[in-house]
Structures are given as structure tokens and as C-alpha cells.
Image 1 (cartoon, rainbow, N blue to C red):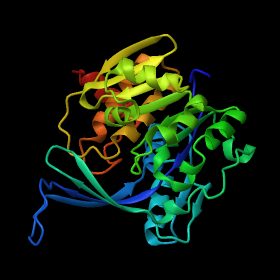
Image 2: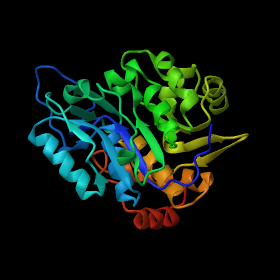
Image 3: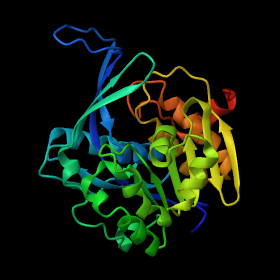
Image 4: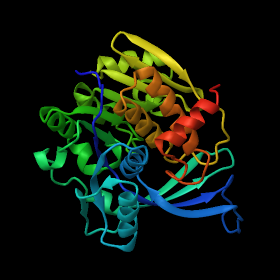
Length: 317
């Protein structure tokens, strides 16, 4: 296992989605009409969110995934390119672009309805980490291992190949809709240098939300560095023999969609600039906090300098 230090650039792999966002909806009443305050259509998907956030934060990012042969796919690719993301490795599916309806209540909690579409075809063939794919990059980030059926069949494969190509590896867990939590993730953990996991995911994986117990179980399966996302409380980071907590920022949550993806991008962006783990944790908390203040997965992300200015002016809790 390696400690993830300086990140020259990131290859992000995973799901890409078109999001339809509605808020606030605090209850479903069938056969009636519900008025809402906001309705938006934005890019979503863990991999596209994270790569866009990385690009916005000034980190060279290349995206590996799939969109459909439709206008929604075109719009996503255009937005990613405008955000500085290299989309040359994004493939086109015969299926329509994955589309997700994201319903948010007045507290910022979410409910998703998803048509998988292109996600069903993505990664049908294993990605080969050839020089052209990884040129200028030093790190591989697997965004939401659970979201793509073809990746779930060989969960350790991409990480093994990335390591063999000389890249450090991070994994952002995501939600296992099929309930096969540790069964799917465990084979990937021995090849994971840095694992991002939130409290709900940690509870499903380990039976606990207590940071030390979560780390103990995940390290027992081979994970090295662990970043436990604690929502508004911030995060707990375990690396080598040390661990610490970094407090979050008190903001009003409008929509938590994409906050974890922006958090992971913030952490990697800080490492890209040569900062240590405590600084990376604080900056990631700031990026995640900004992400929840607006409707949409990436509408709240700001460039590095603007995020830094906000972080320094806005004391954590």
C-alpha cells in the first residue's frame, strides 16, 4: 500500500448521469398536485461530478465512462469540457444517457429515481491503462463502485490494473442498491490507497458509525487510508498509524446531491497542490459545504482561489 501524496492529475472512472432536480418535496401524496420552489436539469453522476469539480479546482482530470447517443449526452460532454475535463475516453452507448430524478426535501435529504440506460453498458470491456490513457496523471479515482453492473462483476480489476500502471488509487464507496455491501467492496480494498466513505455507507459496510470501529473493520479487509465523511460534522481521516477529525462548516443545506463527489475532489485537489492530510481534510470540508448550498450536484463548486477565500473567511464549527 502507498500513501497518496502529491497528485499530478486524476483519471476518474464511474457513472455519468443527467439529473432532473426538484425541491422541496416533504411528502408524496398520490393523486394530487404538489407545488415546488425549484426545478432544474443539471449534469450528475459520481464520476462526472468529481471530474468536473477537479477541473474547476485546477486539477488535470480525465474521465472514463459512458453516455448515450443523445442530446443529454452531448450537453454533459460540453459542460465537462467547459470545466477543463478531458473527455476523450468517454464512450457512447447504444442506450440513452443515464437519467436520475433527484427529489430533495426542505432539510436537503434526497430520494433518487434512476433509469440506468448507458450505465448498463459502461465498462463492459475492462479499461486498459495504456500510456495514452494515463499520460500526465498519477492517480486513479473510482467513483461509486456500486453504480455500474459491469464493475460490480470484477470490483478489484480496475484498481489492480491502475496499481500495476504505477498509479495511486482512491475509491468513493457509493450506495449498494443490491445490498451486497462488503461482498462487492472487499476485493477492491487491498488495492485501495485512500477510501472515501460516508456514515450511512460505513454503517452498512461495518455495522458501526463510530470512526475507530469503521476504520478497524475496513483496514481488516485491506484498506489503507480512510476518509470517513461525517456530513455537517466534517470528516475523520485515518492514515498510517494516525487519525484525526476535521470539523465541518455550518451552512444551510439546500441539496446534498454531489456533496461527497465535491468533497473527494477537494481532498485530491489539496494533495495536488502539495498540502498535507489535515489541510486536505479542511479544504474538502469547504468544497463539500459549498456544494450543498445550491440545487444541483456541481453548481456550488468554485475555483481553488474562491474556495480557499471562503474557507479562510468562514470558520469551521
